[in-house]
Image: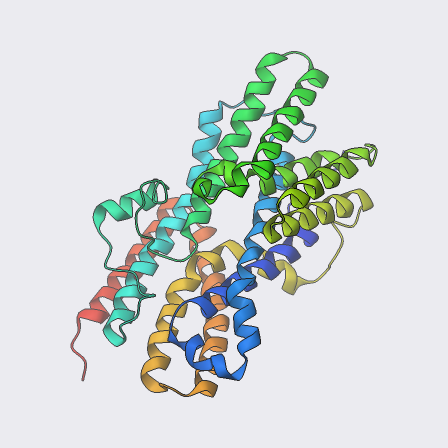
Length: 369
C-alpha cells in the first residue's frame, strides 16, 4: 500500500482561495481605507463585507474531512494514544503559532495607535486577556478579541475534541469488533451533525461552542467516510438529502456553502482527482501558508490602514491601492511567518515572535523627528 500523500492539491486550492477571501473580508470590515475607497466599487466592498466571511465554512469542512482521515479513516478510532494526549498535541499545533501571532497583533495595534484613532484597533492587551486567548477561552469568558478571527482557533480545538470524544466513546462499546466500532463511530458523529444542523446552528446563542459549527465539521467528516474506496454512492446521497432538508427548514448560506464543499471533497476523492488537481506550485504554496496568512494578516492590515489614513486621507484611489497593498503584504507576512514560526519548533517560534515584539516596542518608544 502506498503512503497517503502529505499534500492534497484540491484541498490546498480550497484553502488558498478561502484564506484570501477572509483577508479581503477583514480589509472591507476593519479600518478607514475601505470607507474611503467605497465610492469606487460599492458593490464589491459590500460583497466582501457581507459574504466573503462565509469562506470560513470551507475551513470547517476541510478540518472535519482531514480529522476523519487521520483519526478514523474507516469510521472507528484507530489511534491508540490517550485522547487527552492527542488533544494536547492538537492544542500545541494550533496555539504555538497563535501565541506568536497574538504578540504580533499586540505590537501592530500599539504602533497603529500612534498614527490613528479608530474602533478597529484593539485596546491595549491585559495579562488576563492574553491568558484567556492562550487557553482558547476568550469567547467563553467574553474577553475582547486581540485580533481578527481568533474565535476560529478556539472552535477548531473544540471541534477536534468533540469528534475525538465521540469516536473514543463509540469505540468503547465495541473494543474488539472493528465493523461494529465503525458503525458506532459514524452513527454518533452523524447524530451530532444532525443535532447541529437542525437545532444548535439555528440559535446564535450557541456560537461560542463546537456544537454550533459541528454541522459543517461533521459534514466534512462524513464526506470522508462516504467517499471511501468501494463504498456505494448511497451514503453520499443521504448526506446531501439530510443537509438539504435542514436548509429547507431554515436556509442558511453558511450551511449551503459547507454542503457544497463536503460534496466537492467527496466527489474529488471518489473520482481520484483530489491528489492530482489542480496542479501548480502557486496554489500549493498559498494552501500551505493559509493558516499563517490567517493568523498574521490583521496587524498588517491595521498598520496599512494607519499609514494610508495619514498619508492620503479622503483619497479613494490611493486608499483602494492601500487595500491592495495590505492584501499583498499580508501574504508576504504569512509566507515569512509560515517559514520561520509555524514550521519551526515551538520554542523557536515563540522566541522569534518575542524578538519581533521587543524590537517593535523599542521602535514605538523612540521619539519621532
